[in-house]
Amino acid sequence: MRKALVRKGLAFAILMAFVLVMGAGCCDTCKKYVDEGKMYADQAKASASKAEMAARNAEAAAADSKAAADKAEAAADRAEAAAAKAEACLMKKMRK
Image (cartoon, rainbow, N blue to C red; front, top):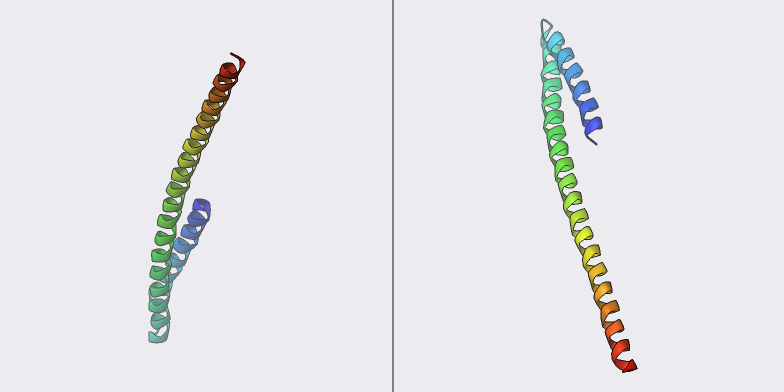
């Protein structure tokens, strides 16, 4: 996900360079389109920032989920071991 964001960041940088070059000296119509391009570039930058933040949040949530799953698995293993001990104790008492 982050690699895609880096590629989009590169595309964004190229777009901004193009916008700056186009804005250097053109007619009013061209400048209008350059301003429109800048607006869309700013929107793209904001969206990329939000996407990166969402990716970080998703990674953190996935790590938390994995940690919880690992704890649940460990608890299940301990419960299984306790059940085996209880069964062994019961069998031992039944033999007496």
